[in-house]
Image (cartoon, rainbow, N blue to C red; front, side, top):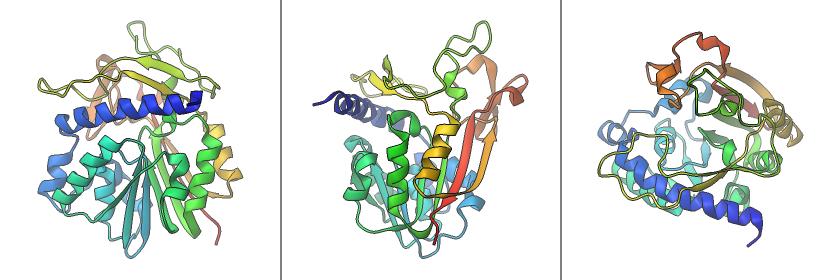
Length: 278
């Protein structure tokens, strides 16, 4: 295998392990199964941006366990497809969807292969959260997104802000920029067990700690989507995060988290909507 394929294989194995850990942690799954009207926090906060999905075809890229995919299916679409690199994530996603009564097609594929792996065109391409950092080529990703949309189709992404991703883990002396803001050819490589959720005492063994990530600046992301032929409809940056990398510096704010002091000094997420011209 070439170097890029090795990177993806490491990430796939890492996410196979994360799938088991995330399901064991809860991950919002019991609420989805217990209440057929419940939506994940990510989909709920973008409910107005998503609009009326009745009778539409929707594809969810990098869907992981499919909690957002199940939530999208509850907004009335005709067809929902979830795509993910991790076979173990999709095995669990299929079980979750069945228990939640959600008719979803799941396809195991690298996101760069989504156009050839999935049949048909879509009215909505959706992806969220923590997605772009796993991709080495944001321009190629944007072309895949555009290729999946039928004319007039819409795209929505909510993701961690690249500025947020530059801050190091050690914040004992405050927030410090340690990671690159702009994309580099070589990834940031980590070797650590666990994930961003609290690890349950009875969690499955985590054996594939190596993972590779790339940061992409806002300019790179916007330019990639525009060059792929999409039209930008909205772009928002927010001081809220879905997770807490620095527990001593952050506080809960509903289903989200923000800095305890001066939260307006750091953008933590962005949300972008675009469409393919009719």
